[in-house]
Amino acid sequence: MGKRVAIIGAGVSGLAAIRCCLEEGLEPTCFERSTDVGGLWKFSDQAEDGRASIYQSVFTNSSKEMMCFPDYPYPDDYPNFMHHSKLQEYIKTFAQKKNLLRYIQFETLVSSIKKCPSFSVTGQWVVVTEKDGEQTSIVFDAVMICSGHHVYPNMPTDSFPGLDQFQGKYLHSRDYKGPEVFKGKRVLVIGMGNSASDIAVELSRQATQVIISTRSGSWVMSRVWDDGYPWDMVYVTRFATFLRNVLPSFVSDWLYVKKMNTWFKHENYGLMPLNGSLRKEPVFNDELPSRILCGTLSIKPSVKKFTETSAVFEDGTMFEAIDCIIFATGYGYAYPFLDDSIIKSRNNEVTLYKGIFPPQLEKSTMAVIGLVQSLGAAIPTADLQARWAAKVFTNTCTLPTTNNMMNDIDEKMGKKLKWFGQSHTLQTDYITYMDELSSFIGAKPNIPWLFLTDPKLALEVYFGPCSPYQFRLMGPGKWDGARNAILTQWNRTVKPTKTRAVGKAQEPHHFCNLLKMLSLPVLFLAALLTLY
Ligand SMILES: Cc1cc2nc3c(=O)[nH]c(=O)nc-3n(C[C@H](O)[C@H](O)[C@H](O)COP(=O)(O)OP(=O)(O)OC[C@H]3O[C@@H](n4cnc5c(N)ncnc54)[C@H](O)[C@@H]3O)c2cc1C
Ligand SMILES: *[C@@H]1O[C@H](CO)[C@@H](O)[C@H](O)[C@H]1NC(C)=O
Ligand SMILES: *[C@@H]1O[C@H](CO)[C@@H](O)[C@H](O)[C@H]1NC(C)=O
Ligand SMILES: *[C@@H]1O[C@H](CO)[C@@H](O)[C@H](O)[C@H]1NC(C)=O
Image 1 (tube, rainbow, N blue to C red):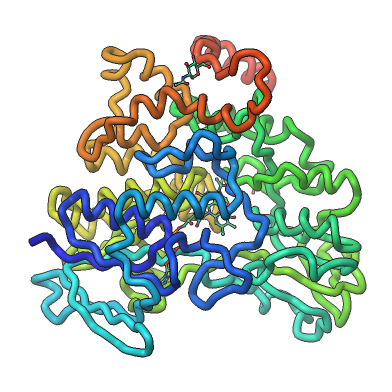
Image 2 (cartoon, protein in one colour; image 1 turned 60 degrees about the horizontal axis):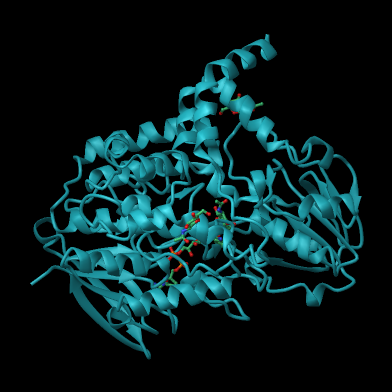
């Protein structure tokens, strides 16, 4: 009999976990507190306790070819950036088609996970669940935590003097559902992430005035990139990652800032990040600069203090007669069912090997899935994390010693601090991370070998978008459809927009990229000349 694995949560991470357990002959049982799969993408009109909550107008910021389950492409007529309802439809069909629903116990809350007394020998966990007010405790051989990390709002109310005297309303973006109730109001949005920008842009059409207050600013990017292709199909490629890694950092920083400023000059819009070359995740919003140009939205620095009706900013200016403040200040990580010392084993910070395994356990029988954030999509990342975790549970893969894992964590923190800045220590370069994980399970695409045996495919894999299919192209867990999926990814990208046939469909030419590669030394010299 296979080992029994408890999976907490049936969002996309939970579904990936169930599937990967089955592939390794493990016996998964998934507990989901809500009534359906989808997690964050299961929309509801009211924020629910302990579950992520989104607003009615959320669209994805990764494109469909980059955010699918790696053996389950979206239908070709799906738009590239989807409304949440469309994504939820896809997630539900995936769960049905792969027969995952029978492993899920809905409306069942996991209230506690503790080590068995025999943990140092068996690695087993006691999982306590609650359904209809009744508690059950069951012993499992391993646990995968897939409970999400957009759940517990970060409300920095203490850092704003005077907020307690403010007489208007204030709320966290988690409780924002739509613009209707803000009609004719004066609204201040605090924060400059994807949610803050979406909400401010949406409000700017209904409210009387909208101001975004941001301490550090942000790069704002369009979803529509070079030649109109989705941004990630152009940016997230092996070739671009190679360039970023081989160029000296001052050159790659310069190119990065230049690219970020091609659409509009961020200084002139008050958006310029304080530290421009930091690879802080950009905001994807096509309307923000246009709302600023139209004067319905403006950007201010951080709030120094609040009075009963207004906000005073760091630069001394004021926003008066505010009706409502929306804190789009993000989320904190919390695992209320677990002893904090397991995951936050140091300085109360999340300390996990490769963002997955608690390093200090006597047995490697716990994995956190879906936690690492990178400039890449959640679904393929979760799939690869879960594949590795399942192999660790079956002892097909083994982890390094506690010491080595801790060293690796320290080393990574050092490098990441440099690239992504203090507040984004969990962020990693997507392709580097995916390649690393896939190499652990022997599924990393072997590019030189591909160039020898299948040059057409190799060109697309290396110069084209690093789509999820690449990680199910070879090795254990390989999907036979992967090659074809990669070769037809541009067809599925163009299909939903080319609804009026005019001429042949276009796709980018790798020949151009080859030229770019050859011209690299020239580029490099040019950069040197510009700087000196
Ligand atoms: C506004 C917004 C937009 C985003 N857009 C994108 C995007 O475009 N592309 C992208 O890749 N990512 C995006 N993300 C990131 C998003 O987090 C991931 O896409 C993904 O949904 C994470 O899935 P998950 O399964 O890890 O967590 P969740 O979707 O949060 O699922 C967790 C599940 O666990 C359940 N649960 C939690 N605790 C318990 C418990 N104790 N017992 C039982 N069940 C429990 C919850 O009910 C929930 O169903 C976005 C996030 C936000 C907030
Ligand atoms: C998409 O938006 C979500 C929510 O703000 C964010 O967590 C995620 O990192 C974004 N993805 C990218 C690629 O920027
Ligand atoms: C920006 O970040 C880099 C990398 O962390 C750092 O070396 C540099 O000093 C920072 N610049 C400013 C102006 O803070
Ligand atoms: C995909 O598009 C290319 C070029 O536009 C075309 O030659 C090819 O036949 C298409 N493939 C499929 C399966 O539609």
